[in-house]
View 1 (tube, rainbow, N blue to C red):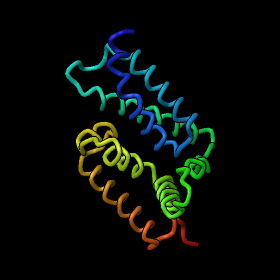
View 2: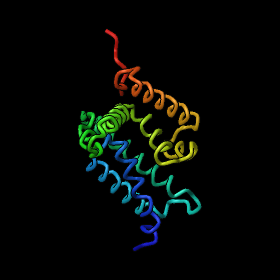
View 3: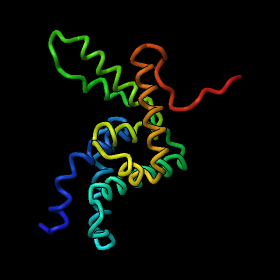
Length: 175
């Protein structure tokens, strides 16, 4: 196994989680995105700064591959719909209906958030990246990360407290 692959391997589970969050739970699409990103990382290994943050570099590659895929789909007219597979991933608990329903509601709310909120919430809240690392991965200023994180958390809180309907990924147009 090349040294590059050995360095990358510990980061694969986190990359898979991030990819699944970006593609709203579609496992096949997430696995394809991770594989494509890893291929890109290995083929570009010589361009990587040796003293740089490997984890951040890998997440940046994955996020950029995701954005490229999104742009390509928009050009083709393919629209991403809320994945129904989220409900099939509820914990298999006997008698714990409330927890399962709360989990389902959280996953629906998270999936319905705009991509910029989902990605920041995931990187900071789940993968425990610093604001600075998340800003580098997403290619935005730290202030933008903090703002998106705040707005994303607020929308999730409002939805889970039933103060709002499901968060909309695009604003409604008034007629």
